[in-house]
Amino acid sequence: MCVFCDIVEGKIPSSKVYEDENYLAFKDINPKAPVHILIIPKKHIGYLSEVDESNKHIIGDMAVIANKIAKDLGIAESGYRIVINNGPDSGQEVFHLHMHLLGGKKMSFSV
Ligand code: 5GP
Ligand code: ZN
Image (cartoon, rainbow, N blue to C red; front, side, top):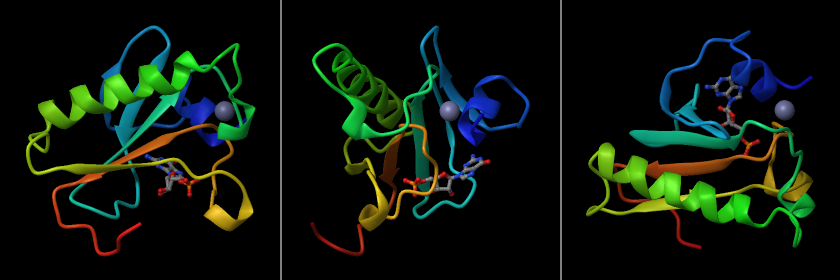
């Protein structure tokens, strides 16, 4: 099991901002911006690199959810950044696919 699977199953509490049958979004426990939300598929997928032809809709679904949350939290106009870390050099710490939604301030670095 992984920490995000435990959150999906309610074994670890989280501040949820969105939930449907297949996805969950909640506040990051260590926010790097005034708005820092994590969007995850409920089904365990470890890495972005596991996304292929069979499950690529997951990335689109998560983007649609991120856009909805951005509107709900009032950062749709001011802007936001989506980040997906994959593997050691990216700094990925939780090995359950997640999309970071960051906003509410000017990002401190450009990519
Ligand atoms: P990664 O570096 O893997 O892309 O991001 C993992 C994120 O998960 C980090 O920003 C970290 O703060 C967050 N995180 C780790 N454990 C928990 C937890 O138990 N609850 C919540 N809400 N966030 C967590
Ligand atoms: Zn998991």
